[in-house]
Length: 234
Image (cartoon, rainbow, N blue to C red; front, side):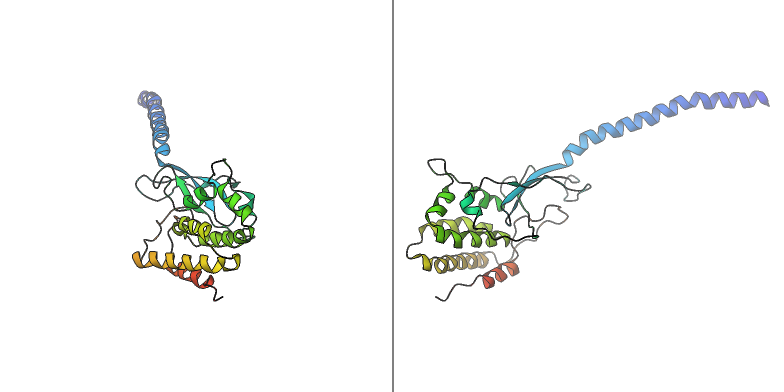
């Protein structure tokens, strides 16, 4: 009887190193698999705030082929973009109010997000490498005080696609300064309504994304913006 028990104990002791080896191999395989898979799930990019004209970086981890994140999104601290103080000084101050729009990503979308249109415009340089719109704003202070709050509110409403044309029109407006706002808003209303007639519906923003917005306008919000910014009668 004791001989049978001793043989059984010897078999158990002999099997323990093999079991430990299998567990170790499994854990090592899992660790190596994570080292390979996790970087494939990693997406980094930048976001732009139309409220403060700042940017921040984000990192998220998604299941490949889906928009499902399996970890919290990590954000850097907001930093100022290369915008002239002649622009920033005319922005509306909206304390406690935050909006972040995707401006770039190393995976889908690349640098083609609408928010980048505004970033590129306000960081434009002239032939002397000075801020193009900073110089314009300094020379046209009254018009700048009208233009930049309107551009800011357009960005907050995801009207980024209309901003480059709005800026081109703004610098070409002739006539007295007191007619600038009416001419500008008349043009914006026409451009927005033209786009809406060409694209009466918009695709919903991709779901399950931790980034706040893809820069896709909702036409009900656009209509609300038009009503909030009517063309002056005089």
